[in-house]
Length: 347
Ligand code: F6P
Image (tube, rainbow, N blue to C red):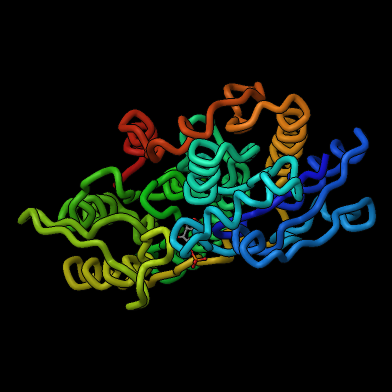
């Protein structure tokens, strides 16, 4: 078989570990493996690279993706889906491993459904918002980086008697904020799924300071809507640029807006840290390397068994497979019971 591998959407620690594992297993079975450059765009532009033992050597700990990535949506390009599908009907590719989040795997699911494309998926995203799997790879690394930042902010917050607001990524799911906030001992955690108001946040901070603490840490997810007692709420979008090909606005900026509100309302000196893409860059944690490796091997097995339209997934401690349709049907957001783990430590 000639097997293609592509990575789509935002890059994520562990992508290279998946590429390595899937390629190693496929090569050992006598197949040929090609990397599709820059996500779905590589299939539109026929931009490919050979993946052999030399190309995958030494990439396990490396962040980013050796085949590149993009947010290209072939369904938004005139004749794009047909151009992609022709690679399979024309005998150029016998199978494709698509490594991505809801957007990339949404395209994979549609290509399988509407064009019978021989595609399998691997769940990637630091946001951990993909259904059908307990965890995506990359999430553990992002949480570790954010937790380390919160730890560091604690000491400077304490020295200056300040409130530190830390804005983390996660798009419309608060998983990174919740986990790093719990691990870092945050005094308030604000996520898109919970409508905690600015007034409630300030009350929690005042209570904490009245109780004798002179500093506080607030972790806010970029997708949290600034919400007020009056019922008004607003999503703070980043740069005023158009949505991407999947219809997403660029988030970012809620930390600054919240920091200003806290300082004005409480009088506590407040500083804001936006962690941004540092959460996505660099080497994956050991846990993500292991998870990515298991996903990569599973993807190669699904291809071998010709079980297309499936995605590797983690259920408990087992690697299983689920349908791409199930995985992309809806976003996996933070359920209320998870927020209850954080709340006892607020204020
Ligand atoms: O989906 C991963 C993610 O890092 C989100 O958490 C974030 O909102 C977005 O990608 C940022 O996208 P970009 O890399 O285009 O700035």
